[in-house]
Structure formats: C-alpha cells, structure tokens
Length: 274
Ligand SMILES: Nc1ncnc2c1ncn2[C@@H]1O[C@H](COP(=O)(O)OP(=O)(O)O)[C@@H](O)[C@H]1O
Ligand SMILES: Cc1ncsc1CCOP(=O)(O)O
Ligand SMILES: [Mg+2]
Image 1: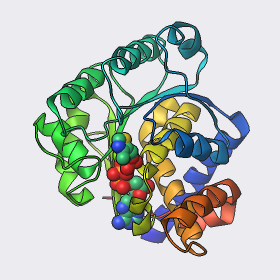
Image 2: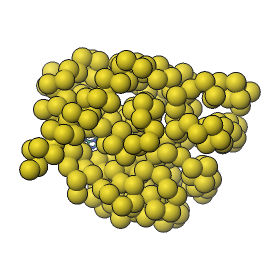
Image 3: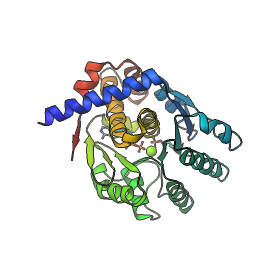
C-alpha cells in the first residue's frame, strides 16, 4: 500500500519536473545576497528561468510577465521590504502564485513583523525550517537562533497546520522529514541527506524550486510543493554518492538535479500521507 502510494507520488513528481523542463517557467526572485547564486543555478538546472529583479521601479513592468514570484527575507533591509511588498501585492492582484521563505523569522521584531505583513498579502506557499514556522505561528520574538533551525521538523507540524489554517497558504517545514500541509492534509517527504544543512542557502534554493513547480500547476500547490522538496532531496542523495563534503555536494547536487531521469525520480521519491 505504502509502496503504491510512493510510486504514485514519484510519478507525480516526475510530471512536475518534466513540466518545469518543458515550460521553463519565469521566476522572479527577490532573495538574499547569500543565496542568489545557488538559487539561480538550482532553478536553471531544474529547467526554470530565474530572474533576480528586485527594484520597485521594475516590478510594475516585470511581475505581470512572470509565472511565479519568490520572496526571501534573508538579508532584509528597510529599502528592500517595500520592494517585496509591492511585488507580492502585484502577484496577488494578478493571481500569480508567490512563495515566501521567512528566513530567521523569529530573530528580530523587524523581521517577524515584515514576515507577518508579507503573509497578509496571501502567499501561495510558505516554506521555512522548523524554528521559522514555529516563530510565525506563535508570532513570537525571540524564537530562533538565527537562520538555522534549533528544532526538528516534527516539532513544527502543529505550527504549520495552524499557520496554513490562519492564512490559507500551503505551509512546508523542511528538515530530516519535509512536511507539507494545507491545514487539513499533511504529507511527509523523506528525501535528502543531513549534509544539505551544511551548505548555505539550500533552504532558499528549494523554496525557489517550489515556486517553479507551483508555477506549472498553481491550483495544486500542495502536490507541487511536496514534489519539489522530494526532487531536491533525491538530487541531494545522488549528489552525496560522489561528494566529499559540503562544497562538492553543492556542485554534485546541481549536476544531479540537472540529470535526473524518470527512473531516478519514480524510484527515489519518498512521499507519504501522514
Ligand atoms: N537531516 C536532514 N536529512 C535530510 N535532508 C535534510 C536534513 N536537514 C535538511 N535537509 C534538507 O535540506 C534542505 C534545506 O532544509 P533546511 O536546512 O531545513 O532549511 P534552511 O536552510 O532554510 O534552514 C531541504 O531540502 C531539506 O529537506
Ligand atoms: C546565512 C544567511 N544569512 C542571511 S540569509 C542567509 C542564508 C540562509 O540560507 P538558508 O536558510 O537556506 O540556510
Ligand atoms: Mg532558510
């Protein structure tokens, strides 16, 4: 039963990856300085088309052209926040999917409020690590050490459900198991390797990949989100077979994502309903 369910998810994930490769969705990324390179390379190796355009003077022209918007608050500043809000408002008005990565949401009052204000602009998906999702659900500061999680993803399942129920977004918590919920259903993806935590911006990169998958099928954001997380994890597992540490894993993960075939995805994806 579980094997059949996993193969069904594997087939679904392969369909999403194939759609990203054939449609090459244009993804506007307003993301942090640390993650720009890995995020753009992850999107390219999956077949999507990244564009790191963040000026508020450009969004009125550019956001209407994109297939999805990705906002990441990692290196938030006073000047970037209005640009994020404007792009999110445009995406929501135009019914385009947009995805939020609330990096270090509980690290400061400024960041927590910025994330909660962005969430009021109706993201399609929110993907964070466990500490970030708990901080958002509780709206509490201080609640994280910084950008890294001090909780396991299992600790944040209830917080993820409550966040999804309070704002209508699909919420994903990453970790050893990636959980995805729409507030009602929950699925878990058990892919990836612990070494992925030792590469900066893997979380940011997988959130961008979620935006690309959701861009191909906005009305099934939960399925697209779980598939993106599992596919990224499979690429990490294959990359780890030849990596010697975090630096080479970064390279091999991108290579593996680019080279994934149907057999690797269908047999590698480990998603189940919880
Ligand atoms: N212990 C783990 N085992 C397997 N994969 C992991 C583990 N921890 C994180 N990952 C994977 O690493 C990526 C980044 O997740 P995470 O480290 O939780 O995000 P962030 O970088 O935002 O803190 C995700 O694809 C996640 O599935
Ligand atoms: C280290 C750091 N500092 C601000 S943003 C950032 C990158 C965080 O990336 P991730 O959340 O994917 O670990
Ligand atoms: Mg992160």
